[in-house]
Length: 285
Image (spheres, rainbow, N blue to C red):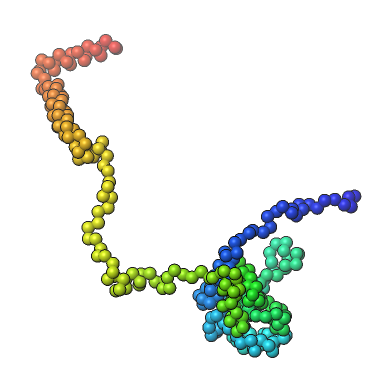
């Protein structure tokens, strides 16, 4: 009996466990996820129940979080701010995981509920909210993209503390991040059709061309296009005419020969042809 030995399919240290991503790309992704959390259709498309939420982004005063220290108080708090429906939706969708993950400390899987973003350290309410299924907490100075866009899907429902929401202006600035500014859209109004049809824009534009000639430099094939061949070789028209005349002479001669062969036979010629046929048949009998 072997008491020792190597591990089957050991974890290799040279496996590529991590992927390097540029810092600006990470910041751009975090900024996009935060912007998407303020768009109601994107939040609803992700599955969050925000029908009774008064507005997005949802900002709550810091004084409302101070009294919350236990989980039951956190549930009352969610009920008070009209977010309890999203919590109940998460609880009703807890499923048993398929596969071997059941025996590897991940037996159940559930959906993601609201994300609470706070500011500061050692907040008392963290443990109270952390114990609720689907609820995550995150510091505004350490925003996690995996929490802002779980599964790569934008539109996480975020509950902000007032201090955390005010701190965003310093977090995403050159003060919080050295020599970094959030990228801005080139145009403020995305309705390009409306901009083009604006009277002030139309007045400065040139009048549309009535006659538009497409493919003005198109080159014809002289082997197929007769007009193009006449430009390159003017004698080709005379040659084609001569060929047509010669063809007409040959055709007339051929028709004349056919007509002569089909001329009406006399009675003696028919009798002689019939005799020749009967003689040839007797020869092979």
